[in-house]
Image 1 (spheres, rainbow, N blue to C red):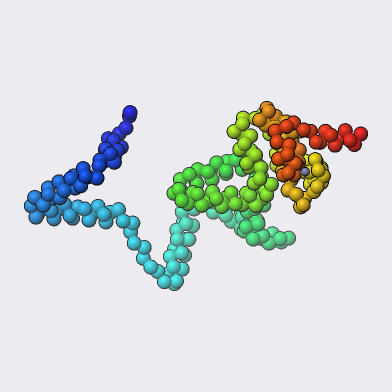
Image 2 (cartoon, rainbow, N blue to C red):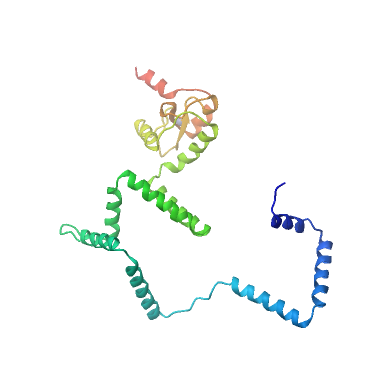
Length: 252
Ligand SMILES: [Zn+2]
């Protein structure tokens, strides 16, 4: 086994029995008692010094007025740090927001600007953002990723339920894929009804069913998918029944 010294010592300590630990502690105590007073003092001061260094510096409490001033100072510092190019682009943004036809808030202006970007530029910005997040502390990173996830879920309400399906498809290593929009379109085509029993939402809940089951090497293409209610889906189990084909035949 290849472990470094520190890891090895850690494991060695863990493997000790309680009696052995107590014996080691007693040994250390007696060694400390035998030291000269001068040496004891030195050791204690070294200990407190290392503790003090580990503690983060205390933050001064500020009044509202002081906070306002420090905020202004920080803002000034930020402005001083800006390059000429950044200043120019900032001025451009401010000017563009105040067009005679429309007065934008900063938020809406930036939203429209982001939408107007080319796909390469978007990818670039996305990579930069990923880098920025990766440098953060784990707790902060998690909270930011969660907030992004929440936003994304709000924008794509259909994909949440599809998530489990995608995971299952990946696990089974199946062929083919379909988008969330294709699935919505399929449901719309059959008026949000179960293609087997004909009951519709909201009486039942439409679930996604593979005509040829994934366990029998069915694909995940949209042509292998039919909307079924929960009870019809569980009745079908892993049989291959094409309800959509049957509907078409009946239509003829
Ligand atoms: Zn049904």
